Image (cartoon, rainbow, N blue to C red):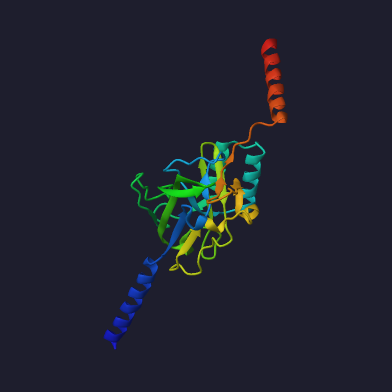
Length: 245
């Protein structure tokens, strides 16, 4: 009886341990496959290879909406905005807690703690064949339930920042699976011209005449006339104070 009990205990222990080390993979398709859009600058040019793509979840969507609004109205600059986005975001694939990225690239040195633009693809855009910087690969293994603030059935976002420009995207299908053992595909083809008003949170959707479209980043706005007048007024006050001194 004791031997049978010991075998049962060992079997259960092995089964539990086996389940705990298994996890799913998050597959990222941002390379124009299925005529999906590619991420570009506001002018439609390439982001540099090695630019980080962030995959994960924002803890507070009200804060996210506020940060986006302040960037667009010019009251928060690029550095402040990216800092606020970082502090509100939990990455999948960063560090040892949520797994590491599994990418291969002959073009750049892949960072096992970050997901990067790591490849090039030949695409047809507006009738011409173009070689563009893109991303594909996977984050593995990922235990969704262990990701702080995300868990199972959690909303996932993809965002990036490059040269004072920022893009934030979320499709309704980008949700963590109910099971930690399931895989999830985040494919930019889920974002279309028809649903861009809800899927492009920051940036713009450029609907090209033929071939692949663009998910263009949002540039840091130029100072408004009112803001320039305010800056000028402060400058005049400062000059008057200096003269009095």
